[in-house]
Length: 403
Image 1: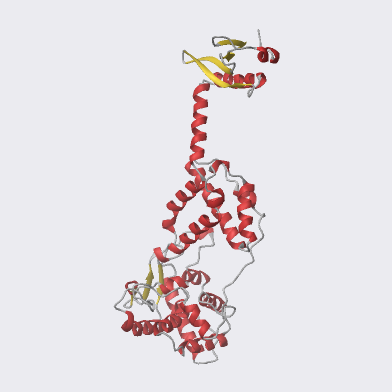
Image 2: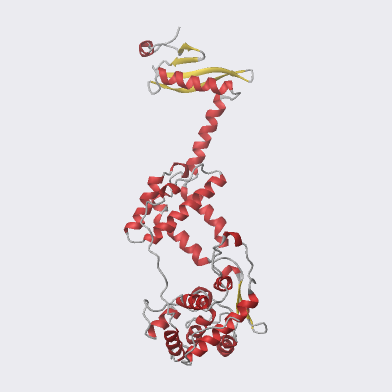
């Protein structure tokens, strides 16, 4: 006869443990101390087994029947309810061990070899400062979109809007890795699109007016500071590489016979070997500098020690000493300068983008090699150097011939 709530409540302890059945395998065990435990008896693979369902009254009669019904459904699908329960327990335990910080660090470790060191350092520093203190110890499977938003808004509220967006991007990358690696099943980060204030597009200050470029180049040529710094200033517009790529240049990377500077993939933002064709003007500056620093590793060593490259603020600081403010010109601005004028003068856009080593924006042409458009780039870099020479001499020439 089936149990009722009243009967279950009325069952008293006895000297020995006993049980009462509800039917279809469900029964209640009453211990000498008065505790009551729901259990489900079943047969699987020709063996009689018993499944612990829970303690009464934490699990009511109705809830116990529901759990027994779920167990019977598993049996109907040739699954052992006991084994399924243990599997869920193991999964929950594993999920508790797979914290967000553990998975994030594993993701970082697997991907950091593809990044320039400075880029990787910024990512891990961002996670350690802005994410791990709040979500690091949480099982990654339990983290929700509102929790992520709370972390991002904390960053946003201190005025670091761009950092908040980059952190949101990192969340997505980490969760996608977690799904692929079997640590999680869902990525809550896409639900936050539009939840943060949009990033205001910022551009590096740059000079693109030919007359003012001429004034800048003459100011650089009259620079009276450290000679190595002067050479870096003179080569920055000729190379228009990223400031970090310029200051970390090594003599072993230069081939004067073939007039090339080959920057290793490990130093490039996009992790691709990059070739900078050397104009005759660039070679002349480098050969003069080689007399001073050629016996060392770095083309532009630090003032304090030849074992390290110049600091990241050296070129920018020199521009400030020349009287150019952060709103007028930056070390990165030489790239914008070249990009703007070379495009205006009709050079092949793809050759310009390749020389700038920009990320490929056209998915159809997603794969490219470091030597792409190299003959045209050689011609362009020499013409660009000649053009800058003319501006330095204050000639009224503002066009470049691409033919």
